[in-house]
Length: 335
Ligand code: P6P
Image (cartoon, rainbow, N blue to C red):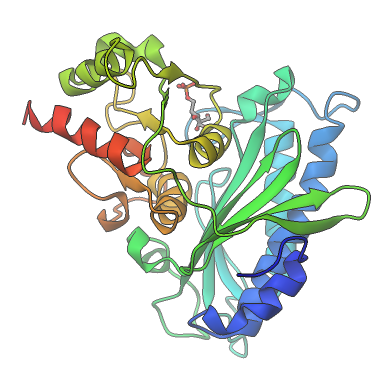
């Protein structure tokens, strides 16, 4: 077990051998994300003071109004990932299509593609609630040295080589996995250094927190309605506490530390669910499973879903194993 207060840079070097591919490239990739996270963190922390709040005047492919900080975060992550010549393509919530990098340069040997939600929960920015960045990393499946294709991005979550998130909260944390457990690093803003503060993070086997937007209750599948009522009954270790702040990264992070379940079912408005499979659900599912949690889309494991579209949405249920298993019991009653 790596000792606390190890810096992120030292941790990457100490654990390079556990990364199944070229360790140097992973180091460069995580270092690029670390740099972008520090730059975005600086802007998020002063968002109320400069003209970076509010809408950027455009809408993204989801039809959601782009916040200025959304666009800023997107630009910063694209810029830092592009400069580190290890990524051949990037897909972002803020871009309709994927971005091909060095596609005309036969010499490039870039092997990885990154999918990113640059600033998740951005509607919370103007009201000073935590937001986050989510990223997912795959090895390309098309020949190295050729332009990246959509096939390189439409890979199931079980092919991810790394995934993580940055939570810009009361403190800024970078939490990631490369398939060998989950580790959390807290930024010391005075030094600009991330320190290992949460080694080997694990979901508690069960918990007492359920996170769902109950404003959509009337549209939920009956099994989900029954599970919510189960959480509210006075029996055994219940009632549970309802905690939902409208920021996936923050709700997930709290539930991983304290024990809990996050649910975003399909609703009348979002028939396929709201969360995006490739750059929200898959990376969070990878982290959840590496932390002994579970992530499902209903009957199926999230990471086994074969993607069909870049911005595909799926229902998402994720958290402590026993809580997700209990939800599955309720869902199966109505198969
Ligand atoms: P609603 C933010 O837009 C997000 O993608 C997640 O971070 C969050 O959990 C969810 O959507 C909130 O959606 O419909 O409850 O406001």
